[in-house]
Amino acid sequence: MAKTVSVLNQKGGVGKTTTAVNLAACIGDADKKVLLVDIDPQGNTTSGFGIDKRKIKSSSYDLFTSNATAEEVIIHTEFKNTDIIPAHMDLAGAELEIIDFPDREKLLKNALAPIWDKYDFIFLDCPPSLGLITLNALTASDTFLVPIQCEYYALEGLSQLMSTVRQIKRRYNPYIELEGVLLTMFDGRLNLTQQVMNEVKKFFPKKVYKTTIPRNVRLSEAPSFGQPIIYFDRSSKGAAAYRDFTDEFLAKQSKITD
Image 1: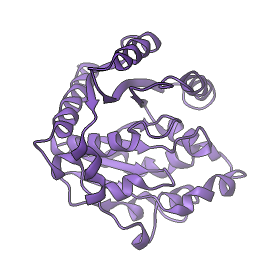
Image 2 (image 1 turned 180 degrees about the horizontal axis):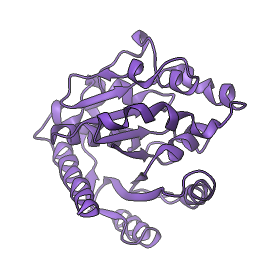
Image 3 (image 1 turned 120 degrees about the vertical axis):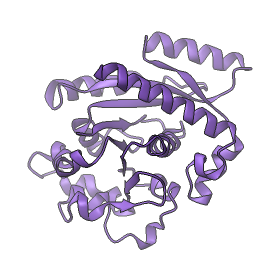
Image 4 (image 1 turned 45 degrees about the horizontal axis):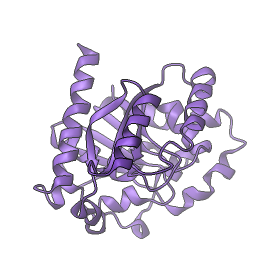
């Protein structure tokens, strides 16, 4: 059965989608079957895999509204072992549409349940908010991964995020745990970066990954070409960082199962 991981931070611009896209691609490259579910109405994950959102016939929106099954929505990408459920702009209105649905917090979990056995990992790229879509993601997930930008205000809102997770753990999903915290846009030469890193480690003791993701031009360029970084420029620093992060992520899974 797949391990399901939400990738989230309600603060935008922290490398959330970059992490979801590249972690999924790197794990696929490591011979694991991966499904990436784009539930951010912006659909940047979908674009990051080179999918034209204008040509999408069905999307994650259809999972929430029960207009299609997960099997019908999945797109098999050109990238090794990596499938995606794309997002469409219709998703922006989904929260209002499903507000009165019975068990509205379990819509995504129920939609994904039939395909859990087909994958090793399912990653959910969440919107930068703590609304009903994110509630669905956390209810469906085993763990959640938090990318944090190494800049001022990095920890702003994280106490609210953790409070939300505690409520979800109490009411909807008693098993969800923090997978880990990934430091992004890292520049070790800056004092601010070191200060943020120390603060994050205080906030999340023993949960911060040793691997950090640097600022990297090629990493920023890859989405405009519709490719994860390991396919766009395998020799770049960004690709090396995400491969290292993937190794660390998978090593942690092996320790859990041993």
